Image (cartoon, rainbow, N blue to C red):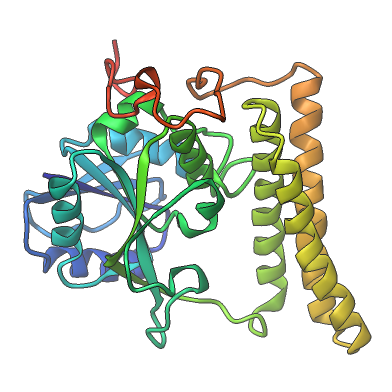
Length: 319
């Protein structure tokens, strides 16, 4: 069985669209809606839909609560404003059933408005994802085998929407699985449609949203440099800061000041997040809410003790 986890907070119209699509899906699955909203979310009147009320805040926290309550052998994570296409559940079920070694799968995301794929999901053929493919692992559409979730541990609740660093909880999980030599694939048949946001519309809130996400990404890079000794992430930071900085200069020269300011905020946000997390760790003020992964030998790819499918007792369940 597949457990589909949808975390939501005061977005009833988008959630209704998502749940209506899931209600039409064939297959053996349940839907868990972790609701952090002030008004209870409305669910289809079916036994396979369950609502979990959470008075807290934060996407990573909501995902941890949902995983704890999930009954499926595979847990799929879908954004509340996404619309899974027909046979979404069957596609995920088939992939995990046919390959017992499969640890996680990243699905395909198309724009709700026009059906065009997001830039990182242009491929129509499946492929194995390595450490350099972290940008393909979108938080709005991925699935993880339950045994792997038990092995890796909870999402880091410092990251994600509603948290101090407002992005990156799924990327953090991707890297933690990679460090354990987990088999992760890109699964183009698992498709959801997701609304896009144009750069030219609602520029001020978009600026704030992108800056917050960039800050989270910078903090995430610092975490993996300092907590996991993955110093190659320093080069990633340089690349991720350099791209928006160059776009900022390009738009300044073209006298497009508003767009230049947008890219400048993104570049600055990544630097700020990296500095914040680094100072917190180096100042020994970190209060971890995740289960640390053992030291990683980046030269090994298949040591038996690192196999992510060998699950201990679940860290999600209360003792």
